[in-house]
Image 1 (cartoon, rainbow, N blue to C red):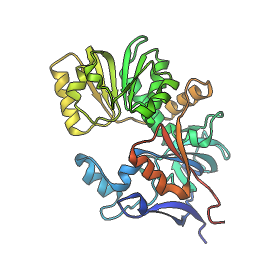
Image 2: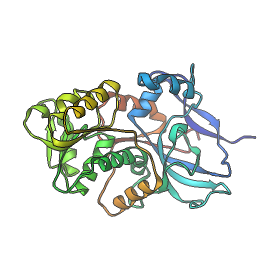
Image 3: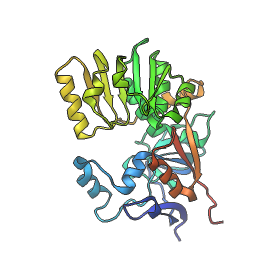
Image 4: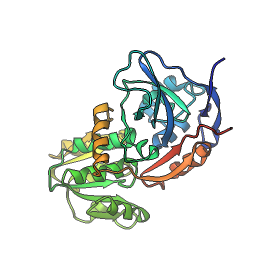
Length: 332
């Protein structure tokens, strides 16, 4: 008889209320996989977009075919996790039973469950010893994306960077990573989120509800735009003559604006999707264990409150990350 596990099941595209806790088959690892007992996951804006399937027009059809035309073929969401290795496939090296690890799940997803089987081709590393599972779960998506974009910025000590959307999951990591590069950091976000940016080391903060940074006369070497919700042409005017504008959300109209602005100036417009590598997770782990970097968790929800967690993230009011604690005795 097949063993069962608890999971949050995603059987229809649409609002958070369609997510249901139920039972499904506990996976069995293949020779090149780990069976991971999940202790924590996160709810990212990406999870919410996939759940309701609000995709960019260029990606809508191929992703809909991949995920399922009429209903999801992969019924468990969740992009990243922290947990414990329960079983090791015979061809796997580098991990052993009992290891506490963090990992992304790729387009397989599956982190909203008690267990998952993952090939070690995914970005995975040992969990930092000085943080909780909930804090560690944000490393594979938020941490690796922030690291990717800050590296693309090619920051030099003393250079000025403005981070738009600085209090989000990417932004809270990016502020800290930029400071580690010796940059002068300005964080842009709403009123109630500015205190955390100062705690994380931002030298300056701008409340976008009261001030438009494109009109204050300041110039920056780098603008890292996490949200991409306004004119790139206007924003790039706030760059120094050879500055770099980095966009994390490459919507077509914004990309066209950025490429046009770069064509008529010496300013660079940069956009790309992050690639996840295990060695980068190890790097983040070392920074966290040395006290130079810390994950920011806004709220923690038990798995049975996944609907509330998705609603909260979807409202756009979170600071940092929203963690999900995966219980292993929900119905016992």
